[in-house]
Length: 201
Length: 201
Image (cartoon, rainbow over all chains, first blue to last red; front, side, top):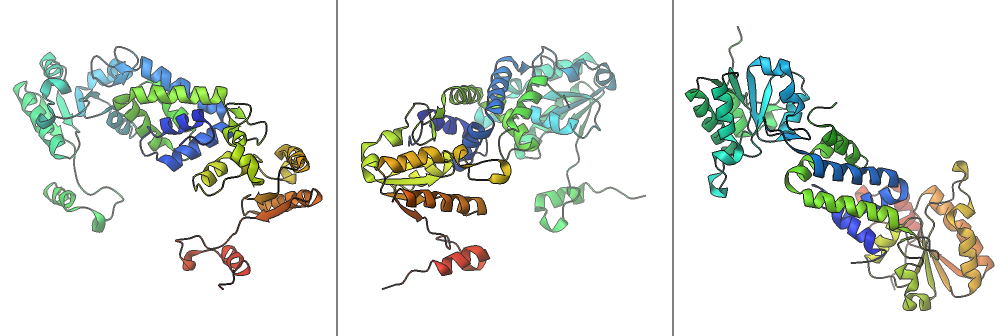
């Protein structure tokens, strides 16, 4: 459907690649950028190109990084903490960092174990992780994979490896979200909340 | 807040320039593009650059166009229709074109009269529009500006110009949207719907 200009149509189609952006939203974005913010559009184009071309993976924790070793891995205080938090994606690292509560290192699986899709331990870097455990600098591994079937299976698999190297393994707590209403919480979460209850002394 | 990589932070900031995209959505977009769709991200960067650099204005109807005269203005059948539809933005042209019902020409104001903001008749191309009327090829001008105070004022202003050149002026109908429920329609729209009622004969 080429109506006004093939270039605008191409831009609308390209904007639809963004997650959660459908035809109407893409049209609105395209016209708004062209009408009012061409400078912003060009800076977005530049940021996309730079990020795609220069962002690789940290060689130590596998997260996105434009340097060989990411900033978090290079932080001496984090290295001294002896804590390693295992997450599925770089977005999880950002979410945890935004709490400002955790001061240890990360290890990013970039996925989870999924034998049916052919994703085995090496694909999510568990050989590297075992080397980290063998290195002796890690006292505790905190498993923060998603509370899905695959995430749980991955967490248990990693806990088994940790045990071999005598590294303490823990799993983040699952339960009712703070600010959430009990009425609207799903059954599995409620079950977790009950089985993981803490004594109030 | 630079956490993982300055380039990713820059990308997230740039994505927030898109209308309706906040911090969380921008993060999700950035990570999804980097993890799964770098090709799409590069094609988006390219589309943004091309559109910003090459999309200008049609010299006849003022809509966005990468050629001097846009495709719609060059369409001989539309030229022969004698119909000219006046809208505020190129997005409105697209919306009307998507109905496939209108087969005439357009004139895009790129705004509306707004004396308080210093936007006068020349700023929205009304001198060009008067020349079009004087040219004699237009039989009817359909005023499809937005049903806002400024849109109405602009429509009336253009109707006055049309009258001078003996061009028939009409306004698109305003009323209850098809599929909408009467209960949820605002009072002004309902008032329009009543005053614009049609006899069923």
